[in-house]
Length: 153
Image (cartoon, rainbow, N blue to C red):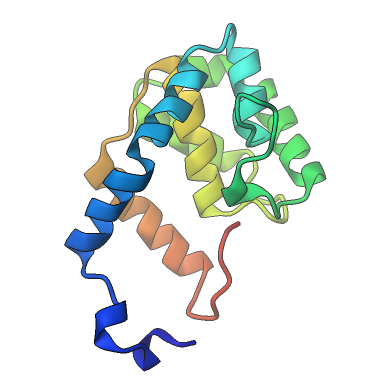
């Protein structure tokens, strides 16, 4: 069903969407980020982040449709630049490094890049500046995912 066909009562205004997110997901999202901060090594953090794994070893639901081979290729490329990742001054620089590596791997798009960078950033204590990164990622997503409905998994 197209959103414009939904009755107005079924649409959420942004404030309601944010409130629902806070109610439903904030605690588990914090726990996920903390789990990356607690990884024993940068190598382990890169592995879990690039393979999009929960602490229990299962794939994160946002990335479950991305081919395993694509995630493994992203991991290999990110492991190769681990020293550069560690030296990133802030999240924006970290994000740029992460984005540059898996850019041409089929199935790795803007949202997955952001998620991987965010997870590695948790280990490295490089938190995103939400306003700047949101604008940046939104622009990239809109460029990569036009109104065709194609979304990064």
